[in-house]
Image (cartoon, rainbow, N blue to C red):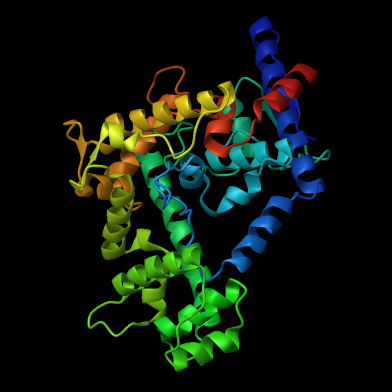
Length: 394
């Protein structure tokens, strides 16, 4: 057994209580994380939705600040902080498990070992660092230099790494989706082949649609479906690298589904967003255009509050982040730089912003206590209530 030996002074006793409470907290979290199964209901639901729409370009792109329709991505902070581990922090996940995962990411403060009762090691509670090292605490994954605090450069590196994870996930999914639209397995998908699969996913008879296209007959589809087809065709042409042949390879199909990771397709996506928001046709965005409310009327106070938040959030994003030269106009180049998920300058700015949100002691670094207090910002989950209860219990 490891004995935590208290010094005779009152100060030493206080250190002992703190260290002992920390050890107990780590032990409780470890046992709970190991014993309880994770709740993956939300993950299963999302998987079902992905299968249903596997051949359609997604409306939401992980790690990109704007949605395809020009709305702000409300999950952006969590996506670039958690990467492919986002599912582990679903709203219905166990708070203890989520807090445990958060601490593994950030620091070496929570023990992962169970101290054997037969051990004869004796540690002074006045040296918590020696106590932590003896317990073989997990190495920090963000804290590169292991100084138990996170700098802006460390956070920038982490954001770039997590963004790359999203791209790797997109590549894996694309391989499966490409196979679904390439039935003959020749490594190419024609626009007609894709159109057949798309309309079949909308409930049309696949054989009838294929015959109609082969015989150059007019397709009987509703106006909304026809409009979607026209938009998809424009996107298909853009993803088709020169020389244009309307046949997409697996790599080109990836650009079709995920334009955020292709320079040419990112430009196309920006043009689409500007086209939808630009009211005067000058191919750039003013603040009034960017903050214009969505189509619809406000029917009650709750709706008014939502609209007020819409304007407030978009105004802040426009003035502080998108309009880089602060001239009141956002050009396509500025919007492209803002939306580029692999822009290192953006990642550094995002890192500084994330640190500023939780940096209560104003030392321009993040520490584990600050991360836990602002856990909802980083993970979308409220974990502090549980931490407070454990603290009071011990």
